[in-house]
Length: 181
Image (tube, rainbow, N blue to C red; front, side, top):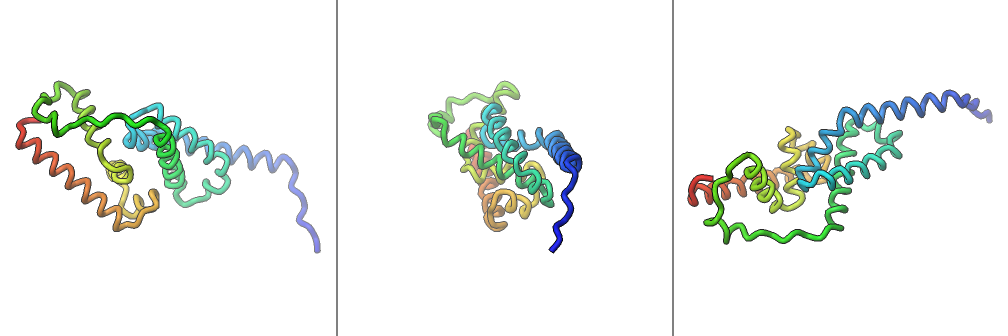
């Protein structure tokens, strides 16, 4: 039995440099996309950044495997999403606003910032997985891609999308009855 000749150390160094360059390229191309996905989940930029950075640390350690995946973005997005859920679980929950009781007291939003705040509140009331499905749907992902990234069945993704659409239709109907919004 003969052993394969050992590679010179400079080949290992070149491989490590190529791997590092590949990871840096991936991060440069996908950082803002990953961050915006996470921000759609929690609306807290700092929390989203923390989750993304934790996921990128894990990814960097496993890049020699993850980088070979057909779609490494899916793996990183799923890891970052789970990191975000973990970080959110450690936070003290915010008190929920009684939107239905205050509906008659809410004035029409005066500007884009107020519209964004109302949207954040409404999205925040969605269950975690529905928010994640909606965020990926907004990015234009297919049902199959969403299912793969979130570890859900395709039929579950379709059900969540249907539920989200129904909630928005119900919200729009409520707004139409209450007056302009």
